[in-house]
Length: 320
Ligand SMILES: Cc1cc2nc3c(=O)[nH]c(=O)nc-3n(C[C@H](O)[C@H](O)[C@H](O)COP(=O)(O)OP(=O)(O)OC[C@H]3O[C@@H](n4cnc5c(N)ncnc54)[C@H](O)[C@@H]3O)c2cc1C
Image (cartoon, rainbow, N blue to C red):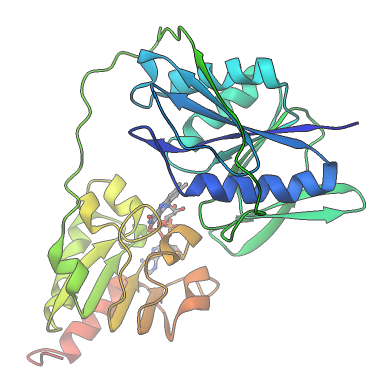
């Protein structure tokens, strides 16, 4: 039986974002297996949009979809699913995607596999790959439930989707009422951190620093190098220990310093995406199996609260 695939486009201010093409690549792969057709859905409040290659596009317009809300996107995607009746719904694993995807799966009584980094065909059917245990294991998942909602990690399906003629666009006016959400104000974060972008040496703090007071160790270490700056993993920024403009990674900054020192950072794929091209990577982690070590030139297996004070003592008075 022919199945159907639905992707949900990522947009910003009405423009379809590049990650949507990765969702199409993932859909191509699954479609080859199941001979499925793909429909793209775009929630928003959009008058005019470019067509997508190889997929018809359904734009769901409502004034309440002007800005992202979990409730609004959930309702828009459910409305589209009612029409399209998909077997698989593909959503980007972005801050918004992983917010509404499980809601959609629960409402449809379907399956949900998040953070998918690959797809594998086996005699038993399609297996979805995701990493686990802070990137130490690659795990295979399948689902007996339909529809299946998957969220796909940005960057995992890079590469062009099959060349295909542009699909049709249908605009649908929907009356999406928000009952649990009221919009107060959207504030754009300050993205600039010039120091970090040009630094030769970046000392980065992860959750492993344990407490905000330990940022002082990171600052003192950075002070030992010329043209240095400090950065953090997302957890550190989420905790409010550093501003978001210091976050390195997939949803933060990409840095390529001469030296990147990762202190108490596990090495999630999302963090690695922002620092992997640094010239020399040094990692301090007390877990010998930490995934960050796979990407490091120098691996220091030690408690950072022990190692950094010793380093600072050794380097006392000498700027590197
Ligand atoms: C859509 C999406 C986008 C994301 N974007 C980003 C992004 O841009 N950047 C980013 O960083 N993350 C991002 N993340 C989050 C990412 O998946 C990880 O959760 C995050 O990177 C983990 O941060 P961490 O390594 O600081 O913490 P953890 O994964 O908790 O790792 C802490 C590490 O510290 C070590 N440790 C603990 N105590 C000590 C000690 N005393 N001494 C030495 N080592 C110690 C532990 O062994 C562990 O390896 C994103 C996630 C999603 C879903």
